[in-house]
Image 1: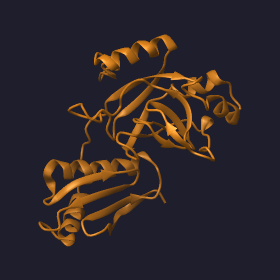
Image 2: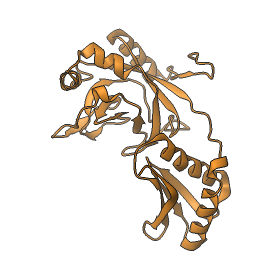
Image 3: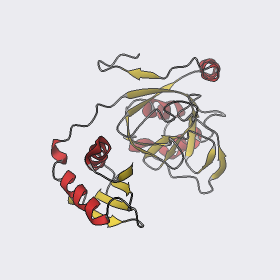
Length: 248
C-alpha cells in the first residue's frame, strides 16, 4: 500500500500518540515522518515533550498534565494538513572510514558467498552509494540506513552474538548499519570503523541524525590504526561533504 492518504493515529500508553504514515520502508513515507517531527520540534505543538521517528511511524510524547490526548491529536492533524509545504533541512553527508573483512568484518566472506560475489565486489558495492539515515535507535546512535543494493542482502545470523564491538558495520537483510557501542547483535559483520558515532562526553553525543546521509570509505589497516589514535586523542574530526560535494 505504501504511503497512506491520511496518517493513522493511536494511543501508546497515557502520554504518547503514534502517527503512522505508511506500511513500507521508503523515502516518501519517511519524508512525512521527519516533516512532522521537524514541525513539532519547531515549537508548533504545545505540551509535546519528545518525538521519536522511525521508518514509517512517529511517536509523539506529551505531558498529560498540560494537554489532553484529544488536544494533541487535533494539533497533529492540523500539522498533517500542511506537511506538503514543509521544507526539510538539507542532509549532511558523513564519511565513515571502514576497515572491511578480517577480524573487523568476520562475516564478510559469508556475505560474499551468499551473494555469489567476490569479497572485493561486496566491498565495492557496499561503499559505492550514499545511504539515507532513516532513524537512529536500538542503542544510542545506532544508524538504520537505507539504499543498500539487494545484490549483497544477507539474512541475519541464526544465533546472534552476545558481544558486538563498537564501530562494527553490519548487514541484515536489505539493511546496513553501524553499532555505535558494544552490544549484542545478529547482523552480519563486514567491517569496523574507529570513529565514535556516540560519545556521551560530547556536547552533541549523537552526531548523525535522521535525514542525513552516510558514505562508507574503505581504508587500510594502517589508516585504521592512525585514525584510532586520533580518535582517542580527540584530534579526529569526521569528514563531511560540503554542498558542492567536496570533502571537508
